[in-house]
Amino acid sequence: DCSIPFCHQGCPLGNLIPEWNDLTWRGEGAQAIERLHATNNFPEFTGRLCPAPCESACVLGINQPAVTIKQVEVSIIDEAFAKGWVTPHPPERLTGKTVAVVGSGPAGLAAAQQLTRAGHTVAVYERDDKPGGLLRYGIPEFKMEKIQVDRRINQMEREGTVFRTGVQVGDTLTGSQLRDRYDAVVLAIGATVRRDLPVPGRELAGIHQAMEFLPQANRVALGEEVEDQILATDKDVVIIGGGDTGADCLGTSVRQGAKS
Image 1 (cartoon, rainbow, N blue to C red):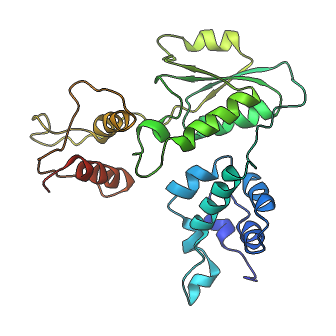
Image 2 (image 1 turned 60 degrees about the vertical axis):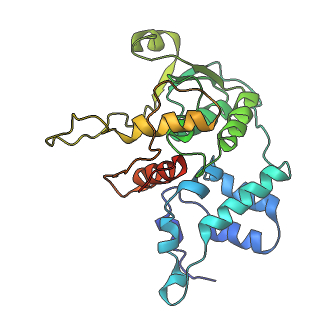
């Protein structure tokens, strides 16, 4: 009953928020996840990681606390996984067209899933040893457990999407080879060039980029061994940048036993 649901404008995906909020209130979880999946391939990612501009756009927020939309989203998808409502949706027929998706972050995964379900034969190329991109190696385990990524990858494989990891497109495999091999190529490589600070002393020891520090910590949290791991243990740590990445570095440093 919010008249104009401004949360639609606040959400970059255009999620049907009032619809699945209402279905959740009515206890119709299976219908709620269907409406949520209508605009969002991976609500378990966005529900945990999105900064929730929908909530700041919520009409209720004019004179009282906004609806906790992000938490409702997480509860819908978690219930759906727990009750087996999230199942593979393989295509009924194949188009005969082939597509290569370069990059297995959230954009690449979403594109690959939609293309596979449309009937195309899709292969996802990832330079790391496992798919997921920043979801796997950039975001700490305490913010999003990697089981969230693994069970989606499993669903996509059962739908027919093929994952080719450890392939550096542009090196191991050239762009020309991809174009010759596939009918279409989707580039979802993300922004991997780090922003540096050209200031005196930048070259000194003990100064690291976040994406040098976080992937190592993620691998160790998953039980892997990392040689010469960058550790914050018993160190005074200064973090430049107060966004999500800075917060991830803070949480990781505290868990490693930083002094301050």
